[in-house]
Image (cartoon, rainbow, N blue to C red; front, side):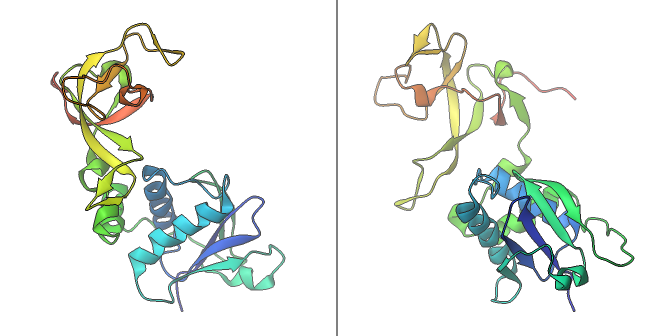
Length: 225
């Protein structure tokens, strides 16, 4: 007895097997969590992508029997007996589905996605948790102004002396002008991620908010609905 499913890729020869929580809502929550963590997806890197997905799901369940990494053979007749069939993912999104060979009715998600993300997050090691980042509103970079605090991904983040890449709070100190390292930085916000003494960080490209959007901690201009 279970609520089984396999998560694989279009060209996959392996997949992650879930004995429980194989409904679409749960699978989408696990995938969304991995995307928030910026893990490489299995469609780009099968070795690390499936390992991270299995890690997140394994931390969520605990124990030793609820998740596995299995060979995937689309001609295996046993797959027809899976409760929820097979999810085929591209990136961290469900791109296709092999349905069970029997009457099937999709179950509604057990909870709203943010609640499910927090449930998954709470069962990860403390140094890996996303916390308030999950609920933070998103601003496009051109909406961000001096004085704003945003979540910035830091590949060199340290937690209790360990290198654990993740999100850190950063404050916008200035905006860029001209070029830096061959990149146009006119009007690009500069944060205090890597600042030394009186230096405000303009000479370090890693302080520039170069992505399309960021999650907000505090906004100098009041947000309206």
